[in-house]
Length: 329
Image 1 (cartoon, rainbow, N blue to C red):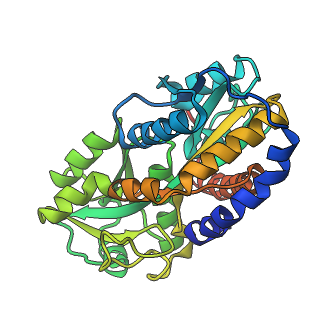
Image 2: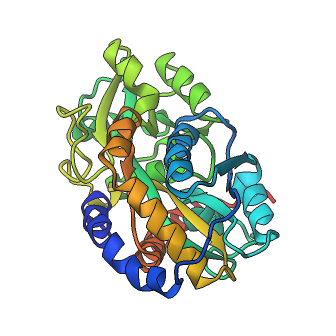
């Protein structure tokens, strides 16, 4: 199982060097000489969409061509994936893939209409973010040890929310149940806002959510964070220990997004795109802008992302098997 943040700091340092052979093979052509479209599997306006648009601004300045954001939400990312699969494999259509689409869906759908490795090839990893385990103020626990003890004293009565069934926030709870020997009940919601609302209101006891979704309620004293899923403590909550520090290293969970292209996209296009995106992701400006979202740039070579993806997929396969969850098709 790969370490998330430390691993990708090393990968980011190697990314420019690793991409040079591909970039040189391209010869100084004119690619891109028209707009590049990137399809994203969610609606406009969320933090990941905003982060991508910040990168698009720099891409335009650096290449002279716009990076057009094409939002195609729905279907657990399947709609977006199929749109890109059907596009010409010329480097001008990309997909912003994520954890669910590439390393969870293959284990929850019996007939997934795409194969992450056969139908796509990576350009670079894009960003990563940790989750937090938060509880409402009615829960008499301030760390995972106390929460586990409290849950064991109330068998079948403690609930945890996720922002959707079959997602990382769902299976994080499954992993904690299995590793701690507890039986939290899963309550899925249709998106992060309703999950947060029900957590704050006390309708559910706990939730695995992005830090930024609960931070205002933490600051207001309405929610407590018991642990973060990153290998290191969050700079925004330095007083909160990681799951690893509290005895649960299997909950080192990084949710991520990556830029991929149709499988037949030429090496030259992949090389140029990798060079451009890695250059942008390595800038201090992007890193600084993303701090407010708790995002970390994760530039990589295509080969490094493939290794990361396979390790991440193995982790989620185990969690899905434990849960018995199957997606509705």
